[in-house]
Amino acid sequence: MICLDTNYLIRGLVQGSEEEAKLQTWTREGHSLVTSTVSWYEFRCGPVTTAEIETMSLFLHFVLPFTELEAEVAARLFEQGGRKRSLKTDAMIAATALVARASLATNNRKDFALFAGLELL
Image (cartoon, rainbow, N blue to C red; front, side, top):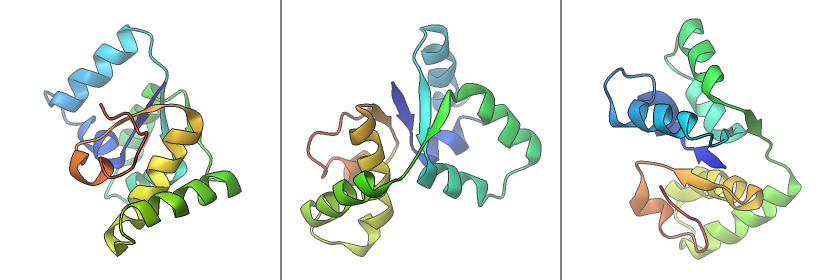
């Protein structure tokens, strides 16, 4: 299972982008593509058109929830990351991927690399 970070949701819509190519490849290879409710929220904040939302929805098998368990893991990751305010949302996205045992496809490797146990693509 591959969890898409917000930047993959956005850049995956750009024809000819590396992210679009990877989404196509992963889909052909039969990987389950998912995203967190946090990334989906950020994506939907846009600007994004209805057609773009529908297109990205075709790639996704489902949107992973953010529950009490993810909140507990995110808090622990936030602590690991040095309690940097800029990492709050990233900790939530990382926690969702970790709980789901999914790899995270992101262009923000620097920040996500701070979170132990998270496999980055």
